[in-house]
Image 1: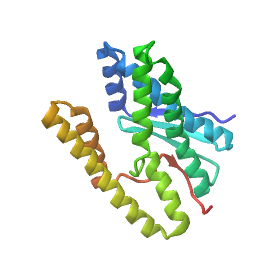
Image 2: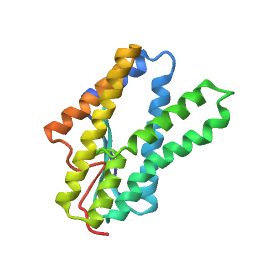
Image 3: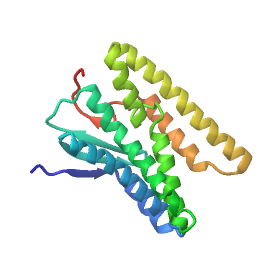
Length: 205
């Protein structure tokens, strides 16, 4: 059985450790649990589709699974990418009856909901971006697909940044969202949006 590896960037590890150590309300742990279930949805879908996974790469902007020894179709990639957000949304819905009983259920449900909806945005390296790209590549050329995805990525990154600025100016909150959007913008302009959530060799459907 081939071993799977988990790799985390040093800055991501430091940030994660800092969040856990300074989190008195348990929000960081709840969010981390929601993120782990999200990734678990991808891993479960890969196992059900007999897709071999070799490496889980993590940084402070998210995670990426490396696929090895298998050429995936666009349809398979779409299903693998959709599995994470679907898992998050189902977990959020499943815990809704417990909202009156536990504040942790509310926090976990909200974290899963936000994680699921955020990942459905058509931003490259997000699940939604990979899903859109797979659909586009099934019907048009690579150049057209990349142009459309690049335009969608820029538009939605700008919207996230605008919301963060609005919250920061009107409510004095949203600093973490602003940092998140600026980090994504830096990657966008540096051209680091190569590959995606599932790094692999691709084929047609």
